[in-house]
Image (tube, rainbow, N blue to C red; front, side, top):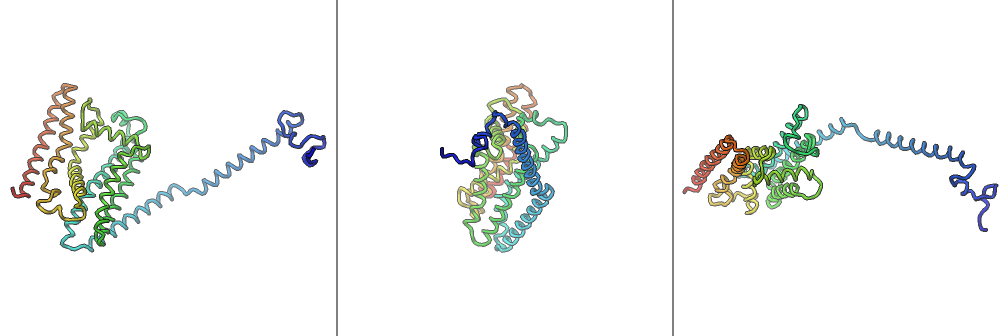
Length: 328
């Protein structure tokens, strides 16, 4: 009744009713309208794709830009660190550098180990060695590119924290300087045990599970257990430095020279140093005993004796050195 005549066709039907599918006389319109609409949509999508591809920089440009930023960052860290060291008192400079070396040396060695592990994976990928079957890992393992990505971030984060430590201490901000290694160590620990599906959760879980199997060899020894435990024996000094660093952080001795005193609990004469050094060898000894229990091979006992003799002699040397420090 109130329908406008502009919305009606000459036949008396509403203009909108002519668009209803299935009515006589609409097949010709549908055959022309819908292909034209789809063609316009495809053309628009293709043009957007070509526009987005044209806006993206080339991989070579991105790589050169990243290398340039990395070189600028490295030069800045070296320049700031050198200027900070030169500002210090010459009497305390050597002691402070030794302390900075103690905090950051373990993480720098771990970073180097991750780089080299990426190199090993790259060599495996270029050969016919099926390291996936050797290490008993699934298909979601990290590739050498992902390992190198992790090591790149480690290479950036650790020296940056060390540069901030040197800069803040040389400019009188002792409390802020002391917080740098503490924040770094806590951040590494949190990332390692972070329970959410980021930062390669499956790989972190596999690493932590393997460490647990090494510390408590209650099950048959697998190749990853043996391999990681053997690496840990080569990193015994890293464990010792980590123990010294954690001790000084817990006793508020960071950015001080209190640890240099003979009666300091975190001094170089501490009994905890040889105890921490022998832990990886004890783990390997326990693995050898467990393997002998499972296989009855005498060669595992000889290997276990080798793991027993080395830490025993090392502990004796370090204990003698410690008593020489204390004068007892």
